Image (cartoon, rainbow, N blue to C red):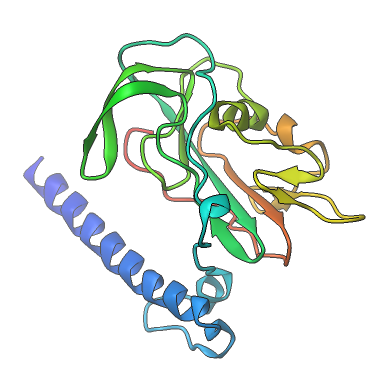
Length: 211
């Protein structure tokens, strides 16, 4: 067990280092420099090209304000994780923490660790990780309903796809041909939604232990 703990700590440290270096790349992208930036050592150039800055203003930071979906329990309990990324106008739309929960909420290091109740689909931090109650049959429409935001073939949160255009959806890096809301929320799914300039979608995500 001690050896396993050391390996886990080392992996966490490496992940934190990679995240901080990617954050620097995102800052440069926000300055319009992404196209001319070389990949820093240890970061694949593909990730540099996929990096986008977080958008500014309320449309890019919509709070959780919808209803709790499913049974509302007083404990989070065991969960499966999916990951959802939202892009609009070539910027990141932050998936809010607190989706599927009711106040009062308790926070620790920016993460929700307690709430009056937790529904079937929950977010506890603004990373795009969506926590699913095992056995619940959930779709992307359930997440957006609980978030309190619209999702359709032409509307994504506070953004419109534009005349003659549709919301683009990718699951595991592959384009989803059906309605955006019908995408199933499943364990370790990587789901990307876009309006505006195309952002190369990630095919996968490294999930926290236990999800």
